[in-house]
Length: 153
Image (cartoon, rainbow, N blue to C red; front, side):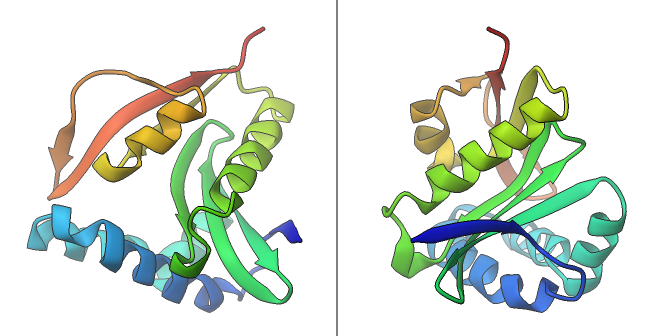
């Protein structure tokens, strides 16, 4: 059984290995060296802690005591990170985290959720109702496709 809860201050070090492992296996090869460095900066412990004090929330999926996935939300309207531990891919943890976040953002008054999806995750988001907002872009070596999910109705 998977439980979802908010990441507590000081627990940042528990999620960075999961994020880095999943990124290194599934995404890094599609980024330039600059993009990999930019991403690693984004997931530094101090950067995560700073975002948690500002306008970000992080939720974790727990299978027993093991953290098996994370999702980071910004301003109750944008998904900043969504990663599942490699050994748990395909088990529904990503979907569970996503819909927990959707419920959280809807409760916070959001009518639309956005994500800048890595190219290899666009199929997942599309399968959950997200639609593309344009063409793939690259900024600081990070490739992404802007997508949105309308919550109206």
